[in-house]
Image (cartoon, rainbow, N blue to C red):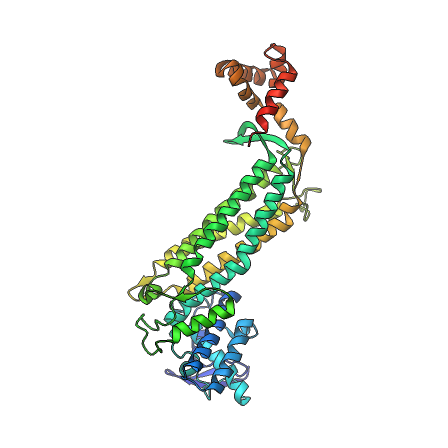
Length: 460
C-alpha cells in the first residue's frame, strides 16, 4: 500500500496515499482495538450536516474565507450523502468523547476540500481540519449534537413511518376480522369469546401508543449541545455561532432543533438518549407481545391453535417437508430482544457522565441508532410481509368456541355461578359441549342458547 507521511503533535505518521484523512485519524487506527463496529450511516450523515452548517455559519460571521468555506461545504455535503463513508475508519470503541471520529470527519472534509481547491488530496493547506472545519466546535459538543440529530432524523424518516404503516395494517385487519368470532384466552386457558377483529384492534392500539411514546422523546432530542465547546462555557466560539448553525440545520433537515438551555447539562449528561432508549425498549416489548401472539395464533397448522394463517415466505425445515415457520414474527422478536439489551447499555452509558463530560458517547450513539434502525426495518417488514397477508381460519375459530368450557360463563346470569360451574365440570368429564348439556338438561333450548351467545359476543 502506498503511503504518505503526515505529522501531528506526537510526530510523523504514515497515512495511506488514497486517504483524505491525516495523521490524527491514522494514529487512532493504529492504536485502538478493532471490534469491527463502525458508526452507522445515519450518524455520519448527521456529522456531515453539522460540519456543513458550521462552515456556512462561520462564513456568514466572517470567520473564514468564503472560498475555503465553499470547499468545506461541498466536502461536508459529500460526507452527509455517504460518498466518503469508506474514509471513516475509526472503530466505535475509541476515546469516550468521540474525539477520534470528530477528527476523522475534520480531516476527511479538510482533505477533500483541499483536493477541490488544489487538486491534491489530504493535508492541512489551504483548509485546516482544526482551524477551519472544526472552527467554533469541540468534539465534546459536536458528538452529542450528532447523536441527537441522527436519532431525531431516523425517528422521523424511518421509525415513525414504519410504525404508522403497521398501525394502519393492523387496523385494516381489525375491520376485516370484526365478524370472525373466536375464543378468548387468559392464563393460556380458554376464556369467553371475542372477535378476531377486537384482538387485532388491541395490537393496533399498542402500536399507536408506541408512536406517541416515541414522539414524546423528540422534544428532548431537539436540544443540541453546539456552542458549548470543551466544557460548556463556549470557549473559542462566536456568540452567534450555535444559533446560526442550528438554524441552518433546521433548514437542511426540516426539524426544529434548538440550542441547549444549559450547555453543562447537554455535555455532561446523555439523559435524552437514555430517555429515547427507554421509549424504544417499551416499543420493543409491545412488538414482542404482538409477534408472539401471531406465532401462537398461527401455530399448527393442524395440531396447534391454527386460528389465523400467516403468509408463507420460505420452507421452514431442512428435514421436514411442507413445514412453514413464522419467520417474520421471529425476526421482530429477535430485533426486540436486541433493543431491550441496547437499552441496558444506554442506561449504563448514561452513567458515564463525570464532571463536565460523558465519556461513553460512541457507545451511546451506536446503540441508540442501532435500536432505531432495526426497529424501523423490522416493523415495516412485519407490516408488509406478515400482517397485510394474514387470513383468518374461520372454521377453526368456530370449532374452538364450540368446544370451549368457558361458554358456561354465559349461563351465570341465567342459572347462577355454582350451577354453571357444575355444567362445565360435567361437560369436561363427559366430553360433551356446553351447548349439548344445556339442551340435554332442559336449561334452555338450542335457539335460546344461540341467542344468548350472539347477544354477548358482539359487545364493544
